[in-house]
Image 1 (cartoon, helix red, strand yellow):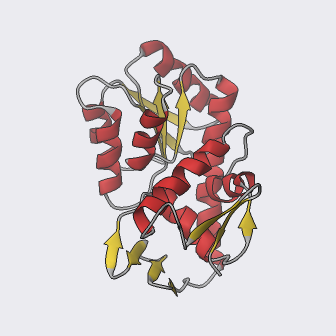
Image 2 (cartoon, helix red, strand yellow):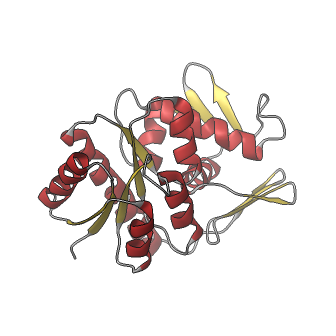
Length: 233
């Protein structure tokens, strides 16, 4: 089945470049140049990936991403941004984007990110079919429900982005095991590129801010200095 990729990009040159690359990968591109039109097309269904510009006229990419994540079902979102500050990246990830590319980017990198996102989607689908329905994990005031994708901390529900939940669930299923940033990138994000370990740091910091009583002294997601991170035993 041919995958359909919705591209929401107001720059004609970049939009056409992304459209051509998506087509070269054997996928069906749908290119629109504003957020409102992009949401209309997304809600019609049949979209397998959204490539979303952050700086759109009118309704910006953050608002579009927030609206996409408010709906039912899961579709990966790759955000494009001309800004390179960590705040802009964090905002995009906080709204539910799965990954981001900072302009200018190479065609090879764009292709690698698209393939990685689909590998992750396929792996999750295959795992769901091959394994029985997972049971929730409860440990020391933290409850992680993989079926409803809900997290309860000290009797309070915590809202996590899709990637934050995946990261926490991966940790919780391997208590006490130490993972490097590269291993987490490969297991949770579906790719491992040198120089992108800071993505793991950003997600773990945000995750701690949401689930830890004291993020400066975390008890669930612990740092192993010089190595990486682990979930409490």
